[in-house]
Image (cartoon, rainbow, N blue to C red; front, side, top):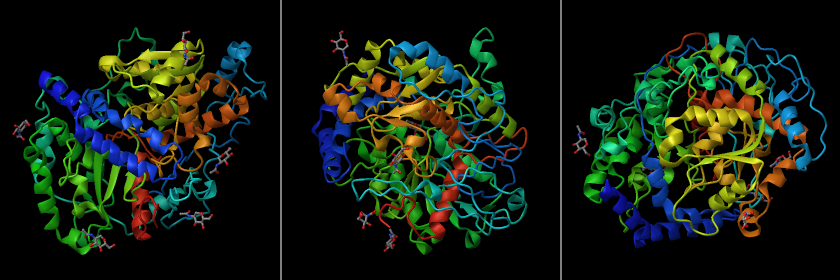
Length: 582
Ligand SMILES: *[C@@H]1O[C@H](CO)[C@@H](O)[C@H](O)[C@H]1NC(C)=O
Ligand SMILES: *[C@@H]1O[C@H](CO)[C@@H](O)[C@H](O)[C@H]1NC(C)=O
Ligand SMILES: *[C@@H]1O[C@H](CO)[C@@H](O)[C@H](O)[C@H]1NC(C)=O
Ligand SMILES: *[C@@H]1O[C@H](CO)[C@@H](O)[C@H](O)[C@H]1NC(C)=O
Ligand SMILES: *[C@@H]1O[C@H](CO)[C@@H](O)[C@H](O)[C@H]1NC(C)=O
C-alpha cells in the first residue's frame, strides 16, 4: 500500500504525467470550446483522482428482462399514467418551502408555483417531444448530436430529441426486436469471469469483492430502522451500495438475458464484447511493469483479430463497455506514458464503439453512459414510487455540496473555488466525503439530494462526476461548470438543452473573478426552478440501471435500453454514435 502511494505521487510529479497533461492541453487548445483548456488544468492531478477512484471499484450480476425487445431510444413508456402539463398543475411544494425560508436572502420575486394535491401524476418533460404513432414498427430516433466544430456548440433541437412519451403497447407486442439482434461474444474466462474471481486485487485495501456482486450493484444497502432514511429508501431491495466502476458487469448480465439476443452471428446487428477491462485495470493501475499490465490487452487484441464478425464488419457494429473514464485507456504504447491501459491506442479498436462513464468529447466513437447510482428498482411501481418521493420531498436546503477535499491545493482550480464559496455561504450545506465515507453511506448523499434544491458538482480531476447522477436521481438540480461535465458527455441519456435539467455557472468567472454561485442560483426564477425539477424527475428512469431480477412489470427504458437503442440507430444509419464528425 505504501508502495502504491509512492507510485501515485511520483507519477504526479513525473515527466510522463506532465506529458500526458500537455498533450491533453494541446488538444484542448486546438478546440474552440470555451474554457476547454482551463478545464484541463485538473488533468495535472490525474493521479489524484485515481487515489479517489481506488476507493471505489466493483462488479457482478444477473437479471431478467421484460420481454420488450428494443424500445425506442429515450422512451419512458409511461403507460398507465396520466400526464399533466409541466409546472402547471404540478405543484412543487418543496420549492415553496424553500422560497419562504430564503426570501430575505435576495431571492428574486417569482411567480408562485401552485401547490397541487395531485402529486401522483406524471408530467411529461418539455425537453422531449412526442412521437407520432409508430405502432408496429421499431421507433427510430435520431441520436442527439453535439457539434464541436463550431464554437457555439448546440445540441440537436429538442424536437429531434428522444421522446419520453409513452409508446404504444402494441409496439411491444409486435416484432419486439424489429429484426435487430445482439450477439454476445464467448470470451475466455480470463477476460471476465476470472477477473471477478480475483477480486481481492493486489492490495487488500481496495478489494472489489463486495462491489462486483449483484450484477455489479454491490451489497444491498442496509440501514438501521432508526435512521429516518430507512422509510424513504423503499423498497429496501431496490437500494445498493453501488460502486461507480462496475457497469461492465451490469451491461453483460443484462444483455445475457436480453430478449433480442441471438447466438447466430449471421443475424446479429450488434456485437457485444464482454471484456471486463476496466475492472482488470484496477489491479494494474500502479503496476510499473508495463508488460504485465498489458498482457491481457495484447491477448485480447489477438483474439479480436481472429474473430470473423470483427473482420467482416471491420470492427463496426462492435461494442465494448468500459466502466471507467476514457483517460484510463489511452496510454500510448509507443511513447513514454505511465498512466492507464493502452487498450484504446490499438487500431483494432478504432471502429469499435466504446461506452464509457466519461467519453472523449472529441472522438465520435465513444458514448457516455450514466455512472451507476444506488437505486436499482425491480418493477415499474417501485420506480414510480421513487419518482413520487422525489417530487414531493420537502427541500429545505438551498444548495448542497458533497465531496472529498483535497490535501494539496493547486491554485485556480474550480473545485477548490467552489468548496471555498460553499464553506463561506450560509446558504450552502456541505458534506465531507473523505476516506470513502460517502461511498460507504450512500443514504447520506441521497438524503442530501432529496433535501436540496441545487447540488454543486465541481469537476475533480476529470470533468465528470458520479455526483451528477446522484443529484439527478434525487431531484436536486445539478450545478455544473462547463459543458464537458454532462451536456457533451451523455448525448443519448441527457438529450436536448442542458438548461432544462442543469445550471451551468461559468468556470472562468468563478475561478478568475470569484463570481458568486449562490447569488447566481438565487436569481433563477422560481418557475424556472420548478420547470427544471419536473424535467429532472422525468429523466430518472433513463439514468438508472434497473435490476434484472424483476418483481413486477417494468416498462420504462433504463440507461441500458437507451444506450442500446442509440447504438442500433447509429449502426443502421452508418453514422458514428456521437455524430461529431459525420
Ligand atoms: C458550423 O457553422 C457553419 C456556419 O454556421 C455551418 O455551415 C457548419 O455546417 C457548422 N458545422 C458544424 C459541424 O455544425
Ligand atoms: C437552451 O435554453 C435556453 C433557455 O431556456 C436558451 O437561452 C438557449 O438558447 C437554449 N440553447 C439551445 C442550444 O437551444
Ligand atoms: C490474481 O491477481 C494477482 C495479482 O495481480 C495475480 O498475480 C494472479 O495471477 C491473479 N489470478 C488469477 C487467477 O487471475
Ligand atoms: C475502420 O473502418 C474503415 C472504413 O470506415 C476501414 O478503412 C478501416 O480499415 C477500419 N479499421 C479496422 C481496424 O478495421
Ligand atoms: C471566504 O471567507 C474568507 C474569510 O472571510 C475570505 O478571506 C475569502 O476571500 C472568502 N472566499 C470567498 C471565495 O469568498
